[in-house]
Image 1 (cartoon, rainbow, N blue to C red):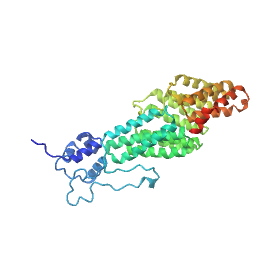
Image 2 (tube, rainbow, N blue to C red; image 1 turned 45 degrees about the horizontal axis):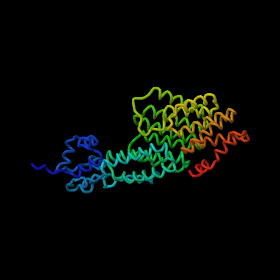
Image 3 (cartoon, helix red, strand yellow; image 1 turned 90 degrees about the horizontal axis):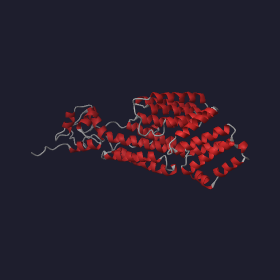
Image 4 (cartoon, one colour; image 1 turned 90 degrees about the vertical axis):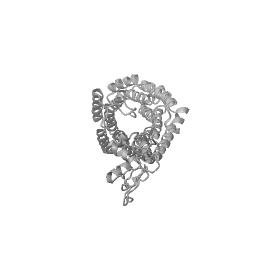
Length: 407
């Protein structure tokens, strides 16, 4: 017997939205699977009221495009919801709304694969080279987002949020453009909202706290950290994520001159990591670990004037860092140089600073160069000594100077 005709439009839209079975769509709509079977039959009944709105929202198309024939008097509704205010009207960056064209579910996996590749490339590729690629990928994501629906849309939005976050990190930490980073992180937060992903939302908000903290605006930084912690409570936050939030707040407090509060926060983060959590960390949280926390601690001890403790902590970090963690190595070497400069040992300070410059020639990192320049300024009383002159020769050599000016 020939198979009875069915509503292929609805079935195709369901699969494109990432609901590979009728049961998956039924679960998303909180209805029985028999209801979905009726909708995918040859004579699907017209959905009514809230059910119509939920169905068109999940699948990104109106009811007639989904294969339904409206009964008399139903044309005016068609499952459409009242439009929301444009993003620009509430001060948000533009992420497009849904359109009729629906991409297959595979676009989410493909888009996310490039996002993962960029995440790994960040640790070795020059930021000025990677940044345009990340921005172009985010632009693609904004074009794909209105052409997806359901689970596919959420997956694209999650990867888009991570891509914008990566671009914002490069702009703030590497390119030193705080204003642009603020706008980019706002786009990341909006994409996280599209994905309804509170954990990456927490990470984005915590990154925005760095911006006022670097400017010494403690109240604004604290407010953003409160928001970040609020978002983290909405999701299954891992111990690693919660400890990182402590570390971020500690860095903000340190930048604003509150080193005692910062050391308390770092101690709490250490306890959180030791206690652990039943939840696993998100894949994108690759910038934090116990050794990274120790690096935070060493810098705070340095700025608090606890030189012996800072030296011991930073030497331990240097021993534990992987060879691939080249950017962090540069920062730690710069902090060790600062410890020795503060301890009135210019020879030792210059040795660490030269090692940091060696690393910077291989992998550029603006924060690492900032550390070296701070050390050089602190060595002004010793600028006529041979070790400091040798450091100047390296600091203002052709390769280092061109690299610094080119970025």
